[in-house]
Image (tube, rainbow, N blue to C red):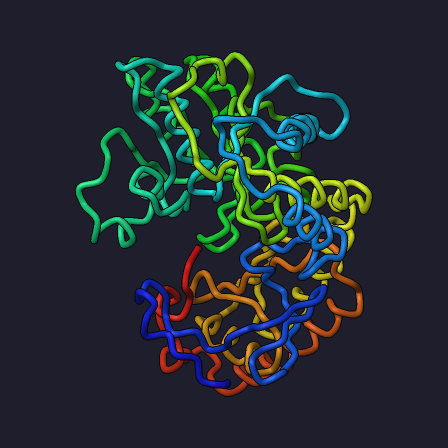
Length: 413
């Protein structure tokens, strides 16, 4: 890799093994011109692939028209995108009747949700219950919501009011949800950074009933799962749920920084002017990218494509040496390995021209473009198959010599 001087950057990320300079579809190019097959999509962000022509043209056109005016004034694109998101929350058929706040990231979308829950419930009910191993962001409030003590430890004390219980444990959630103190439950339908962990089929349904019975908001973090990746527009739709609040980001701008918090209108009404805001949130440039992204997503029927392509990828992964199971839905999949070989496999895959990552020592995560082709899937499986075949043959059950902590080799979300 051609040397890049990174000395002026804060050391918040591990030294990158590769520096990318260009992308097209599912292909990336590094500083030396080497090609890579991208099966991570910038952590589920470039869901239409890199440099999608429709999105790129929309950004270029908006850049020479109007980039920013601030939220002291209106723009014509944000309301249109909000209507589309409200419709997709309802499965793409009819508007649900919710309202949207636009931000710049998933963490900011969740920050909005947390503030909204407190404003809706009043000063005495400020508690939020989340789950261990979940990831909700890195601001102080969303870090407090994140159930990962190792990420929280350097920044204690964190904001008060957050409790964590085991994921997929309704009894634990029942015990934690005191209706005199708790305003909301915040949950991922699939825990991505925890290793693509799926709940039991009745878990989210049970949470919905629990929250309804106790007048607690059910807030679903769809930042990684949303907008077609799981085979539905949103992960909660697999179960026919109706959340009170839904957060999204990542795929919404196909690479343009944008996040959104949707809430049922009667919940959103708790906010009044001045309660929340964002200088860049909802600006015309980001909205143009989101409008174009959503338009392509609908015209391509990306949920259906994720279902079909995900089935092909899953079937192929299940046949690879060392893979004991495959978790996830659609094109958000985690291959669970028989040994702690994931970090080494991800590293060797990168060297071989395939981008994946290891959120856990024994799990490889896959989140390719929702427009990924059968040829690209088969190529990725071929590369990974050769690597896993070699690693399992060489190290077998003794993988301790090549395993490093996943957080040391991954920048994290």
